[in-house]
Length: 159
Ligand code: CUA
Image (cartoon, rainbow, N blue to C red; front, side, top):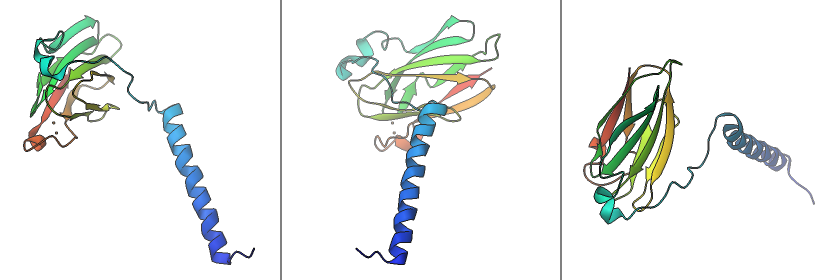
């Protein structure tokens, strides 16, 4: 079978691109900690506001520089909207977020961190972020969730 020169060139380029793409995926998994969210439990979306811990959303300090945050993501806000944490003696604040939605799918992305998750009605989303710099970090809903989607954000304030 005869393969044209340019066809051969493009076949080689395509193969290189494929290998680079696969290496990028495996590289982020192996070296940058990319992973799928692990199952963190289920919840009846109609009863989110009555079910513990989501009946009392808020911030709990569990150790020096470690926090547990319970969030209700609803149309169109995060409750609580502002999360205040202090860095511990090691200079880091390790924050574990547990979030649920009583209505539709919301996004849960925190700028300058690796947190990028979905909050799906019926599922509990659990993600952990480590903050080693003080400042304000926006929490952004990056799944379209209705007419107020663009105004759905919160913040983490790290001291
Ligand atoms: Cu909630 Cu977009």
